[in-house]
Amino acid sequence: MHRNILIEQIKQKNSYLCVGLDTDITKIPKHLQQNKNGIVDFNKAIIDATKDYCVSYKINTAFYEVLGSKGWDAIEETVNYIPSTHLKIADAKRGDICNTSTQYAKAFFETFKFDAITVAPYMGEDSIRPFLEYEDKWTIVLGLTSNKGAMDFEMQRLVSGDKSQGNKTLYETVLETVSQWGTKDNLMFVVGATQASELQDIRKIIPENFILVPGVGFQGGSLAETSKYGINKDCGLLVNASRAIIYAGSGENFAHEAKAIAQQYQAEMQEYLINI
Image (cartoon, rainbow, N blue to C red; front, side, top):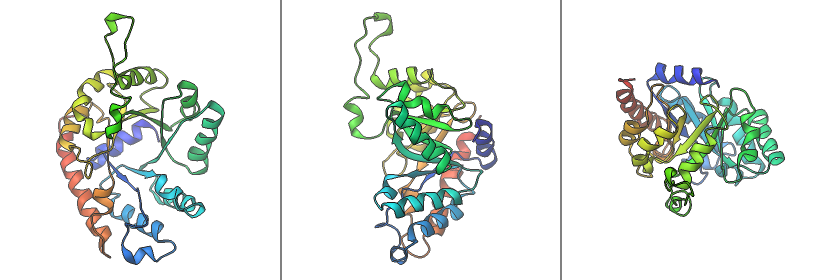
């Protein structure tokens, strides 16, 4: 999906909501757990209920991989059901030596027809380059995550021999470096909503790139703070909500309840988009 199409969708829907289809077979309604196609039926119902209020869907592959070949089939069927108007994200956090990443890129961009994939930057440019070679596809690089383990490496300050550079954190170095490998048209970054206070400084490093923001909802991230510090002239945000939406209801009326929560997010986002 080209950047202009994504921006147009945001404007049309007054929304930058991404719905996370992190579908856990043990958490979907009981009547679907007994159905051999329950996960796909659940996902389709969620998509039908929320598609008017979001611009993207994110599939965390771990929740499907655990089911073996049936899980991969569910991924493929779900991706094919998502409307072409919505950005389709594989939350797979891949990244390996170049020839391996080449196969990952083919798998998610060609076989499964995703528009975007999350990747880990630890192994450097050659591990990310194969994803960036695809036209109108997005590589979403882990920047500053919302888990407590972010303190172990991401927030550590690096000692620089050049005093004018100061002691930057590892995540700042990652953002600065990786942003040079691609463009605003094919590079996004992950910044957790629980790190919203850092977004103002992050925007100085990547002023034009889109940022995928997980952690709103059950993880306690603030949509208001994220929007205040993260929105740029093109919006530049995709805010993901997973459990807060897809598990809003646990009975047969689950899709209607998911729709209501998605609509609430969209209404709040509309307020934040007024001034851009």
